[in-house]
Amino acid sequence: MTRVVAVLGFALIAGATGLLVLRGDDAKAAGVSAALVPAAKPIPIKVYKSPTCGCCKSWVEHLQKNGFAVESVNMPDLSAVKTKYGVKQQLQSCHTAIVGNYVVEGHVPADVIKKLLTERPKVAGLAVPGMPMGSPGMEGAFSQRYDVLTFDKDGKTTVYARR
Image (cartoon, rainbow, N blue to C red; front, top):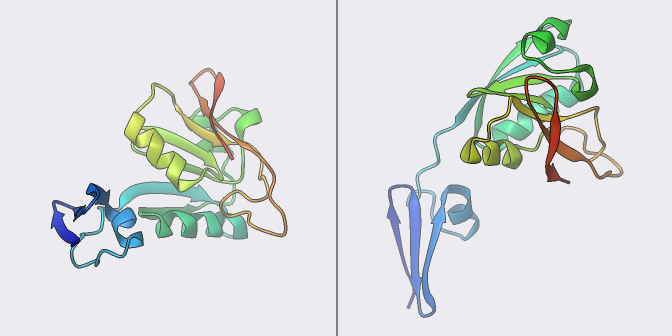
């Protein structure tokens, strides 16, 4: 017999093979009632973007579907924002976001942003330079491999995730 109990946002599933602990979306994916597992608190993120860019709009929707509370700031020119937050030319893309104390440049997947917020590395932020096909907001007929980079205030980068 399997028993499901919700405790502080976690679902505890006790079965014949042991105890499984699931949180939020993982519990929902396993079929645990949303009434039993409260939704995680949305993560606030501020996105600076062009008012006419379709892929920026799609990336914002990706964030919203993945637990982010997005504040969009439409601007015709983002160069001042990128300069203010230290996003070097080689890292730039079409939108810039601020989440916690981090800068997020370009089409960074929501799960990688959550990983950054959990691990808290000593970096300025994350970047997906350019606009790689298949990245969130750039879905289409094909996908290309791309790296999610960390960067520091001097522009030094390291690969944080590969997609």
